[in-house]
Image (cartoon, rainbow over all chains, first blue to last red):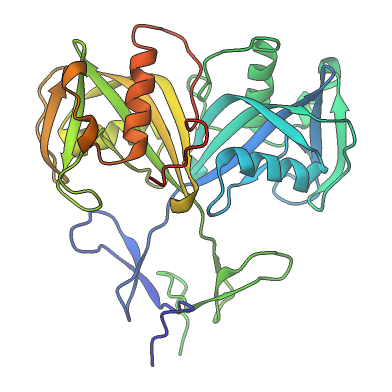
Length: 181
Length: 181
């Protein structure tokens, strides 16, 4: 069988490449190694006049539960640009990123989550394709028991702790928590 | 040709999956999509009594130039654990991570770099397999013109700006810089 490198067509199997110490996906035809690496999730807590934007997920996992606008960073994208794109795709929200809130690791899922604080440019928001509803919540009304993921709870809590504080240290996971819930 | 799912053997070609808006690597036999995503680099500025640990790279890219201990995060690893592993692999250094210094995006390389401030537990360091030399540098002796990557310069500068400051805001890229130099 001929091997056409562009577009790439590979036949992968798992083995430990020479000089490495872990199994990788190695193409048996050309030797190309497809490294599997943790994925980056970018998101933002978006505020408008004291209220916070949440999206009710229309897709699995956790369909029907509330989350901040967040998703996988794409190739050749900066983390800030990715967070802005996700706010647009999930809530048609135009945002300005203000500060880094947190960097979380979810090792079970091989995820690194990079969370920003952002301001909405206006309150003209509506559900994107992956949301069944989007709403601006007063703090007292945040649906804590219907949040989609532990890290949504973490980042909202951190957001609240530094509300109005211009400069602050970004946080990591809460002590002893890894998102396994 | 039979398809053996475990260990996975796939024949990938680039096409836009249904419901997506970007080309992905799709297996023509089983439909598995191998998403290509930005990779996470984790590293740390490691200090010992006012001196900073640098490693002279023994491998390309930028073999012979100086860097902080840093490398690709592995699957199921937290960012802090990855930074500690890299310090050990590259300099046989045992470190304690203290604070998040920076999150940089290098969009040309689809990299997100997560950089910590760390303390060496002792000054017993030696070159790992990917280093040809490791040294503790006084600030005045840092080889600025022989640093391996722009982000090494960025993070050392940020480290110096917050030396002795217990809590500070993590930085992003310097304005207008994307590591292309």
